[in-house]
Length: 65
Image (cartoon, rainbow, N blue to C red):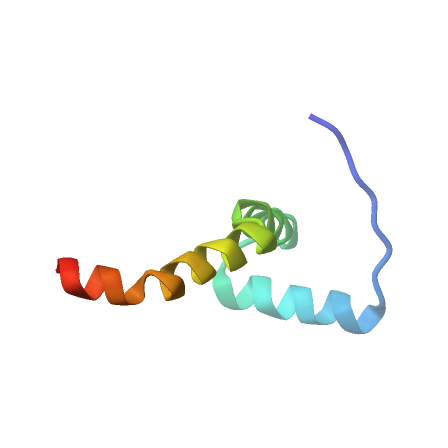
């Protein structure tokens, strides 16, 4: 596993600490969870293509259902 060091403002650190406390997790775990959430999102371009195809074929999908 690799180690990463980041610099955050005091205000951001305070918000991270408050949120992690509210959720009952460590700041490290909150940050790792946030990173996992970002990395697991579908690519924005792919998402736009899916929406375009769904919209383009909406009438066909309606008739087939």
